[in-house]
Length: 145
Image: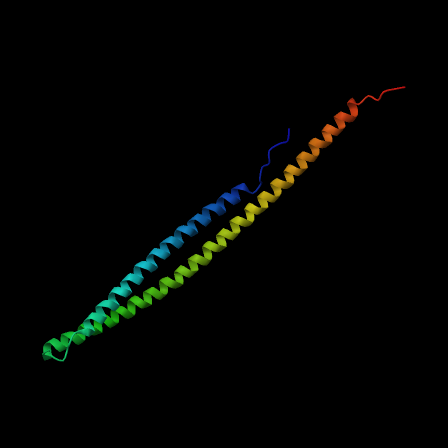
């Protein structure tokens, strides 16, 4: 009976699976943060567009001053939100690259495990076949004339 195959690097493979899962979770979090920031940028742009559509020619001096202050505040907020979105996009790309690399590392070890298991099974089958051949040779009794 052939002995079962035991992969010597099984603990390393388990560790790489765990690291890959952590990278996937980090990627999911980065994706969520990027999407949330994109919504914030869109909302600020919408507010700014709506504010600029208002007719400011008919406003009094005080209201015009308030209109300008609010417009400047929206512009600053939009600028900061876009900068944050750019940072989150870079982080998202970094997390994506890292997740792909971790996946490649794990797949490499899994492929090694498969190849070694296949080789082990072939060697065990060859040993078993040799044993059967040896038994058949020893048990064979030629007929004498």
